[in-house]
Image 1: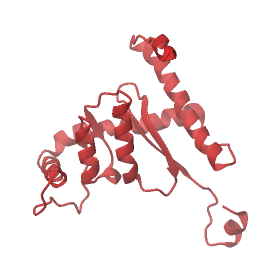
Image 2: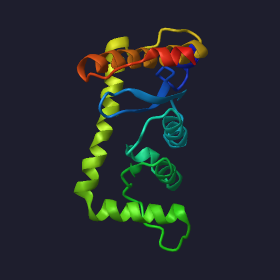
Image 3: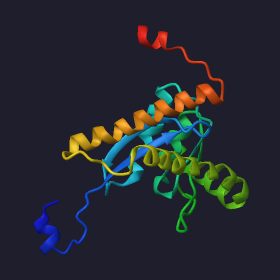
Amino acid sequence: MRWFDVKYGEKEDRRVWLKLHLMCGVKTNIVTSVEVSDGYAHDYHYFKGLVDRTAENGFAMKEVSADKAYLGAENLLTTLRNGAIPYIPFKSNSVPHANSYGPKSELWTRMYHFYSLHRAEFLQHYHKRSNIETTFHMIKSKFGQRLRSRTLTAQVNEALCKVLCHNLCVVIQSVHELGIETNFETVLSN
């Protein structure tokens, strides 16, 4: 953004934001999939890629918790196709698809009824979503919340490097605290 626009324009804020969309594990907070977008991109469209890449990378998903921004029949179906149960709360104006047919509308309706009739059980599963906030806090507290690079490409790379460094810290911590054994020889030989 140009300084002229900030000083004389209607916009008072001169910051340009980048947004990290990521999935993480609930026990170790390891980032399983990440994508960077501009600060005003809609979250919904990044969900499918994150879930698919997490499954492709060999992570076994049992449940996926996400906030209301990711709610949609396609995202619910993508989660189910990857062997996990979606726990995405419904918005106040959500209604079941009574007259629609097909796997999208059937899944939407079943999840809507589960959300409506078994709210306490649903929220127990959904509460695991707070782990993503913990993961963001871990990254920001260890590596800073600001990006120092000047160009957009360098900022994206800097954000991804912070996630990579976070994952390295989490692997080291898991080795010591959880007794997880690592074998980097097989990774290096491939």
